[in-house]
View (cartoon, rainbow, N blue to C red):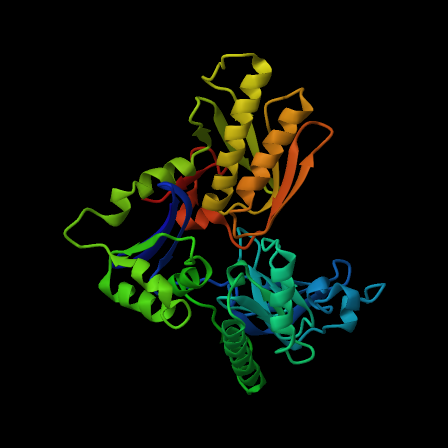
Length: 413
């Protein structure tokens, strides 16, 4: 059973996704704060580094944004030149440029931006200059993929692009057409604002706030119910969902004030704090250790208190399979991105290694964020990547631990 919990406080809105009462996703936003990914800015180029094939832009944030040459060249790979030109031929210092944030500032790094603009809707993602049509990889039925592709192609203007989201599976063409038209109007408004005379840098487009974004991206037919503790938010959610998915309205329920806190009832805070610990215990007594470095995240699996009942090989297989499920959940909960290495307990039987990898792939399919599992290395490690948008530690308002001189993190209370 999948359930969405929305808890609104005086200063903060929090959203949690539960699967069979296990916390799998969490996000929060302070009222008045802003999620930067997806926003578009008129920025000014302040530095062009030919040796890095990159440029830095002032978009009005504390740190300059980073623009790589691949984010300037055409979005469609087939239109890339065989040899990339020097970036100095594409942008110059002082030039005003419309860019979109694709990765939020993390640590000492500024935001990463692109000129491959995209605006997500409920059923698809509109790309005004991509010139191709795609379908979510999670839609596996070839007939349905062709239907969705054709539905978008016949409504696109030459040069435009569109990707049908997983939620579009089985959706009537008229809803996809309506979504596409709405997204196109939003882009036309961005173009109009970008052409107007004004200060540079300046923001010209703001992506949805926390609640509308989660309703758009997560609240679908696989969600059994959405509980919200605030009447205003309850009414707002209904107004968002009624025009696009009216059948879901009955699943939106007001959680009464006279009852215990919504998050307390489902033990969200407890699960959240446990999920961000360095050592995560498994149900069988084994455990997983999570370590973050500048370059990657490492998971180390151990048998712990679990001794098994058959032999060491079976003990390793059972613990690794449980760990694969838990690691997939932790990636979603912590929103871990970038390069990920998993050191499973050694197994000698190829079928056991494949079983563990299959379990990891199966659980990773539940992840809304793109993940790529490369498989086993020659040293017996599993390599995978997950798209990085922002630092997952921001969700807990983490601060560096002063006792260990910055190698650990502590949640602000």
